[in-house]
Every structure is written in structure tokens, then in C-alpha cells.
Image (cartoon, rainbow, N blue to C red):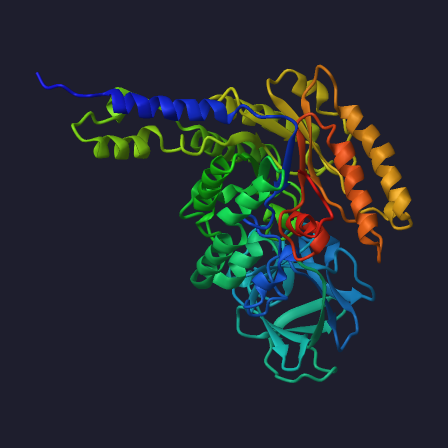
Length: 531
């Protein structure tokens, strides 16, 4: 009978198991930082990523208003949609605003406020209407911009003819002229009143030929192993990593998204373990968008997350939880051979595939759902399903529930989360985005942190309830010309108050073109000290 020495295998197994077990032993509260704009792009943080996109001011979700130079009126979707397009508005608001869906650098769909699309009438009259729920060929238009005057345009329909304003209530696609004079009925001025620079915009903007390389280069350079070493050596204990729903479809996610973010997340786990950091996976962007903001990877700014989105989103959470906690040992998964090399290789590939990355601290089920469009009942139903999905794979990882933004009770999740083991409530505190901060002095901002934010955090931090997490904050404010000492005091106030959160806090962000938004810059320039 042949003798097989299984001790090397058992030793490797026990090593993997011990490493995985210790991964969840978090030392709370965490001091962490968001790796924003890495796996979910936010153009405001690094606008140069978009520089090489042709017609980069006309990306998906760009809001435009169109005015006839002949009639001097704005185009409008009558009743917001499901009707004709008219040219009788002297001022522009919602019904006069169209959101672009980009087909290529010159071709677009126009979506109206009722979420329908502008197109040719099905009655064969060449009238322009806004009645289709999904765009097709007859809803696709070419925007022709005048050389030297890019906001002076003509719009070519799928029949090869141009839109013309015949009267206040008649817009047709039957003009064959080529002039640019104000009196030409096919000439319009286009005013851009809103834009998005998220993952959808960059991927669709560059297109399938260029986007994979652009995003791979960005992911490989924006956050590296050296950054994890820097974070660890400067007092941070965790990273919060925003990811998008398409990561679960890697390496071939639905268009226009491109693969590669999953490999980057794997790298982050490896580096986190090496430098003693924990990882918080944050589902920042969900299919259908939970808040309409570019960081949710929305196409056009509409929030469409609801009950029908729950199952798809839970499947993403299930994927992330399974991948992050995949650790199985069975005799069938290990080949007992005379050579240690094969045993080690098979173990690494099968039994210990993710045991080498035992850094998972928590999974956040969604980022910043917006009230009231995302209802509390919908959110609770999703949170329960997402929590159960995670618990199939781990009982030790924390599950983070984000409070809703907008008009919502800050304590609305407390009773719900009380019944969940290792649950965390995430609150985001910025001293921006509200007119109330515009007149504040330096001391008023600091007092607001100690008093109001301290009270806000205390209200959701209970002795018998879920833990609390200030998942986003930044040492920036609505003050111009503040001194370094002012910023230092403001940052210290937030560290003092948010340090009371029982799960911890996470600065937004590690890197950013704006210095005070970049924790790396703040640490290097002695604005913040964590050690």
C-alpha cells in the first residue's frame, strides 16, 4: 500500500483556515477611507479621464434645451410626453428639457420628462412626437453642429431629412435645405443645462474599442499596492471600496460596461491582507439607479430602482458574498500526491482560492438610496433579502445598511436592524450641498460638527441596536480662503465626533483632484494626522 504524506496538505489547510477565521476579527471602530473613482468612475474627481472622448459634452444623460432660431421658442414635449413635440415655449423648464442617450459620437435618442422618447410619428406624417417607451431607429437622430458654433445645430431624422419648425405646434422631419441663417426653420440653438460623468458615460463615450483599455489603465494606476502600504502606515485600518452591479458579470458585463473591476477588487483583497487592512465592499451603483446620480452609474439621471429591482440586486450581493467568503475543504478538492508542488497548486486554485484574501470586514448593500422615490418598504424588503444572501456564506461579516438621503427619518432603520446580527447603519455627513452652510464662519462650521452632527450621530447610536458608521465625510466646506489651521481644526472636530461611531468612519476619498477631498493629500501635507 502506498504511503501518502498528507501533513503538508493539512498544514496548508489549517493555515488557510486560521487566516480566514482571523479575517473577521475587526478592531472597532474602523478608521477607513473610500477608494472613490476607482471601480466606479466619478468624473468630477478626475475629469481628464474623459478628455479623449469625441463630442465629450454630449454624453449619456446630458440635458439639453432646444430653441428654434426662426420662431424664437423652445421645443417641448407636450404634457411631458405621450403627445406631440411643440415649439411654443418662451421659457424652458422640465417639459422643455431633453436627456440624451448616446448611440455614437453624433447619433442620439432624446428622452423626455415622462421617460418616453422623441421620434417620428407612426402615422407616416413625418410629425415629431414623444410616445415610445423604448427607442428604435425612428427615435434616433443625428446632431449636426455648425463649425465654430457647436451650440448651433440641425437635427437629422432617420428618414435622412432635417427637423423643421413649421409653426408653434408643428415640428416635422421633412426639410432638405442646408442653411444656417436664423430664418432657416431647421436651425436650433442647443443649451446644455446638465451633464453626467459616470461609469456609463465614460464606457459608452469611448465605445467598445477604446473603453476597455482606458478603464484598465485607470484601474491599474489610480490605486496600487503602494497606496495600501501608505494607508496602513498612516493609521488607517480599512478601505471602503465602491463597486458597480456589473462586477458580478465580469469579465463580459452588459454593454457599455467593460470587464476588469473584479480583478482589481481581488487585488485589493490581496493588498489589504498584506498590509493589515480590512475591506468594506460597497455596492455603490445598482442596476436601475437608486438615486439618479452619476456615482450610481445611471445612464440619464432617472432613478428607477424599485421592487422589481430587488432580485437582480440581491444576485449581485450573493455573488460578492460568495466570492469573498469562498472557502471549502473536501478530500475531493485536493490531490494527494508525492510532490508538494502539485498539492500546493491545487490547494491554491481550489481550496484556498480566496483564503489568501481573508480581509473582508463588511458588505454594504446599497449606497445612498434616495427618499421618497425609493420607499422605506422597498428598502427594507431589499435589505432583508440582501442580508439573508450574505448570511448564506458568512456569519461573521458585518452587513451595512445605508440610510436614505432626502426627506427621511434618520432613525427609520433602527427597529428593523435590531433583529439582524452584526448590522450597521451608514450615515453620510457633509458640510456642503445645503444653503444653510453658505453663511457659516469657520467657528460656526466647527460648532455645527460638535453640536448638530454629534446629536445626529447619538440619535442613531444605541446601546442595544445596530452599530453606526459615518461612511462618507470630508474636511471641505463652503468657505473660501481658509487657513491650514482652520482646516486642521475642522478635520479634528470631525475626527472627534465621528470617532464615536461604533463601527467607525470612512473619509471621502483617498484620491481626488481637489486637495481637501483627498485624504492622501491631507495626510502628506499634515492637515490630518491619524497615527
